[in-house]
Image 1: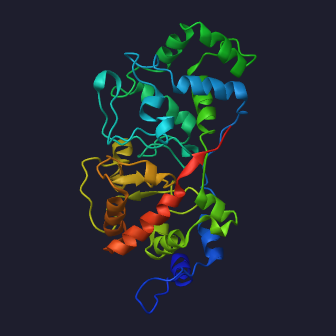
Image 2: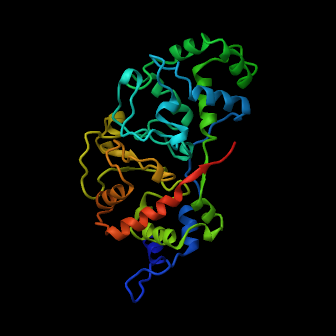
Image 3: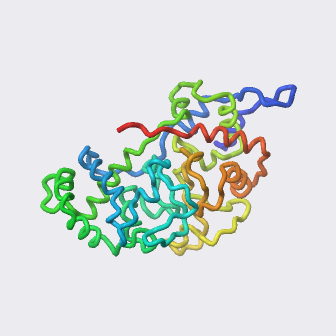
Length: 322
């Protein structure tokens, strides 16, 4: 009923020529839907400059891989909005996983990490690829620690980031440092400015797209300032979706988790193609059309798709300086 009442409050009037006029956006409703961030887990510990700097270095450290050829930045390139633009990413020695690498920009805002949401925080997530065969290919925390303890320059940087510890080069501290760095990967878009009261930050066409985004029901899953990233849902909720990857089921083995995936946030979505968990969809418009059909049971018109895409492009934001 809450979603229905919101939809009733928002309409897109049609002019005599058949062209939509300026959207009749109820700004109170918009603020209610998008005003707050998801309820994401937090971590203890102050993100000091020394810890952030160490995390930045570790994020780009290729020696934390079996063949010295892969770092976090290889798949999550900061020059490409925190991803690599590939359907799936090559790992060490050319191995390849089956899932699309999501952006690290604003990732800490989400309720969990990974498509199957098996990690609660960016800290917990950070070393999991390091110990996955088809990614960095290391064997575990002990190997991570052994590699870093064998690199002289890390002694001082870990000691500065974690003062007072007899042996600061630990896997837990690696996770804390990379997490501290990733929590600086914050972007700000014109939609953020719009939500903060600068109502002219979005054009009439973008506001029209926002109205269509809400009316079509996309807000069922994509709300908050992250525009998603706060829940998981079944892929093919209304119309079945064919996928060899069964999502969360691979983690739990529970029948109810088949095809359950984290709903991705849509911040910077126009810059992070290809789309879906397997990177199989090349364009934003096609992703919108497919989601409308399979998740909402709606055959969106070409016009609706274009309007929604226009709005989603307003979610592209520049990284805020540290």
